[in-house]
Each structure stands twice: as structure tokens, then as C-alpha cells.
Amino acid sequence: GFGGGAGGGRARCRRVGRRVPGERGPVAAGGLPYAAAGVTELTGRVDRTLQYSYDVASPYYIGTSFSGEIAQHLFGRVDAIARGGRQRLDYRSVVPVTDATDSRRDWATSYGASLAAGLAGTLHLRVNADGTKRKSVLAARNYQTWQLTASFDCAFQSLPAPARAPRGRRHGP
Image (cartoon, rainbow, N blue to C red; front, side):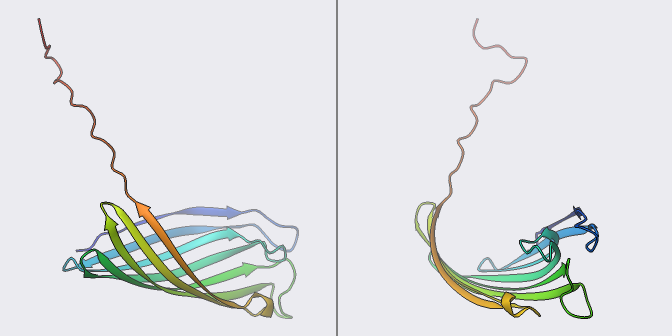
């Protein structure tokens, strides 16, 4: 069945000098998972953020992203996961990026796959292969990267609270 959630608000980045005005705007995030027949789960996500940038010439950007994931139970305690996403980064610049504009738009595409296996109890091993490709009008900002990671995780459960005697009753003499 369906599940999910959404949230929103407003964010603010302060004015930077005379050339870059402050920015205020809506931010939001939402996700919609769908489980099919207990063996497949599809998840979609949309985000809009207003973030400060590490680049002094472009002090902040508005990021809009769409992503999805499909998880498939294979057998026993083994699952396969595939994911992908696309992000648009709209920068406001202090100096002109091109002759015509003080802003720029970069694009990032992410993709990956995982294999997850339950080892014992709540101990899991997950192996991930993830890639990112970024395109920008500024050649120095273009890149493509891959990474292979592995992780172990363990879920801990809290102990139940001690039972209490009902109110209004006294035990003993």
C-alpha cells in the first residue's frame, strides 16, 4: 500500500554585497513509498531547498530534485535496490557568469545500486555502487564520479517500560 509524508516552510539566505540580493522562498520535501505484494517497494521523492554555496562567486542556490528508488526482495534475507535522481541547482552570482546573466543553472544526475543482506539477528551488510554526473556552464564545475562502499548496521530495540499498577489501587496492607 501507499504511505509517505510531506513538509514545507520558508528559508532565507542573507544579502551578499550590492550585486546579490537576499533570497527568501518556500522549501519543501515529500516522499511517497508504495509496497507491492510485500516483495517490491517503490519510493519517489521531491525536494526544494535554498542553500548556501561553498563558491564565493555564487553564494547560494535553489536546489530542486526528483529521485526514485526500487527495492526488490530476492530471496531469504537478501534485497536488491536501484536508485536514481536528477537535481537542478540555480545559483545567484556576485559576478556575471556569462555576458548575459548573473546566475547559472547546473544539473546533477545520480544513479546507483545496492545489495543488502541480513547476516544474523538485526545485523545487516550493504554494498553500494553510486555515481554522480554534474554539468555546468563553468567547465571547472563539471565532473563524474563513482564510489563503492560497504556498511554494516544493527538495529537495537529499546526495552519495554516496567509495568505500573493501575492508579487508585494500592498493593499490600
